[in-house]
Image 1: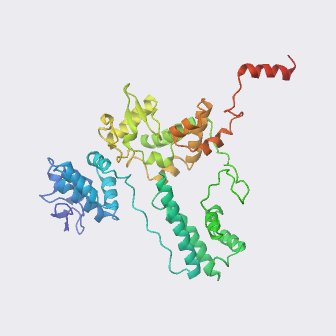
Image 2: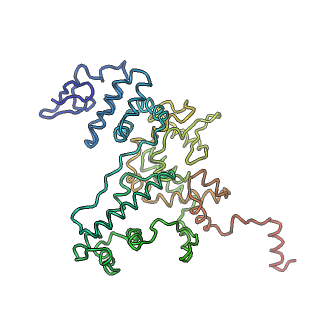
Image 3: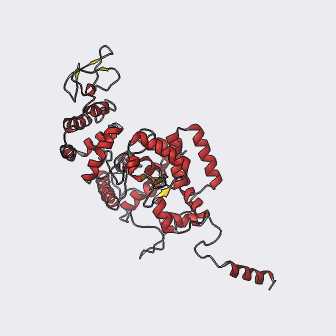
Length: 426
């Protein structure tokens, strides 16, 4: 029989010949001293939270819940000290798998400790040893540049997913192996025809996936700002491409279809993207501190930096979802729920949310929200940026869908006088 990681007792299993690693497992028969049996203690929350799945990270998860459970019935000072000593991986496992009541207990302590948003651990990235030395050296230097860029992005408040570096490096590694097989042992020996041959052999790889690597190899600045600013020694870069948008009616039809085929949380996630202009990632990691109830009893949300009143029906539904994931959020006054996600376990994983719910149209739906705001007369770029979090360059691109320069409106009387001259009525 397996030994419980929390109470130390032996866990029997209802299935013959198998072991249960956690007392909360469906097939487990908990020992008498199990924390689950002590309903008067907050240790029961830790026992209910410790899930044996996924297998990866179980040891860190068990260590975190064990450490928290030992002091959870003591003062917040003891609990805060334990949380501060947890590793980043243990802290993530703790908050990712904790039951809602335990999250509500722990989140204010994380805020007091000034802990940044709890994120999944970064995936280890390495260059394979079977690549030729000179090709491998170039990839190592490229990886160093990517890491420096990632640090800069995070210092500016940006976020990237754990497989970010891994994804950026996967195609260059495939290219290096392709060159190795062709007898090309260095990046200097690579020619354009070799890149063309690689793309022909890998039709799912697009040229843009190699552009950053090729710029880095040519000793250019692969991360230079290229949004219409003049740089000495080069011509002006291309303007931001025109954003593809949907009409407000098309967005409404799309959301109606989502409502019919998806769950309520999935529909609400799609609504926040298509109507509030939030990114799919921002919706997925939306925390309960960004929801409040105003003095009039309306649910308000902070998608970026400004608070916005939600429509009554949408506010009621989002409030009901938040009640399950973050009990007590309606009474909160500060940011004590900053580590409790609203859609935790009610939305699929981010990639599935983008593909299955948003139909791989997240960017177009978000741009359509900005377009609808412009059509409604909300023309100030700063306000749109503060409300939706959309960049000024993207807003300027979407403005090009309108038939006039909306920032240079003329007095209607002057327009009528001009029209009389043009038509010869004056």
